[in-house]
Length: 115
Image 1 (tube, rainbow, N blue to C red):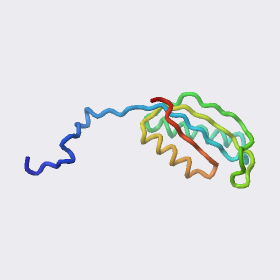
Image 2 (image 1 turned 90 degrees about the vertical axis):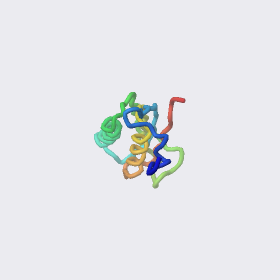
Image 3 (image 1 turned 135 degrees about the vertical axis):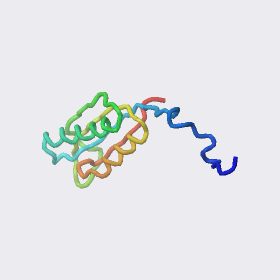
Image 4 (image 1 turned 135 degrees about the horizontal axis):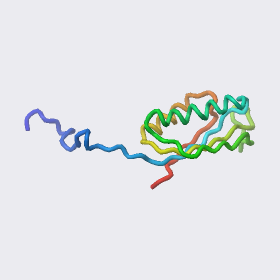
């Protein structure tokens, strides 16, 4: 075929492409200097980040203020939060990016929970 691109030859039309939702778990540590209301605000913001992009949030476990395994940014404690959610990979990457940009998040780790 003249003028057809080889890169698009094997692509499915958009109506046949499906976005597969994947189950994830993210654990993040918030600064201990935050007030209780600010901690709740951050937890809500991160959950809304998932839902506004088409994902769904499951269990959100607020583990409270705990001692860190090692010092981070001259801090010895942090608020631990574990959130389970289902979304596509792009949404999970965006959540991870938002957490890296937030000054209130000391560390975060996201894992896929399904195979």
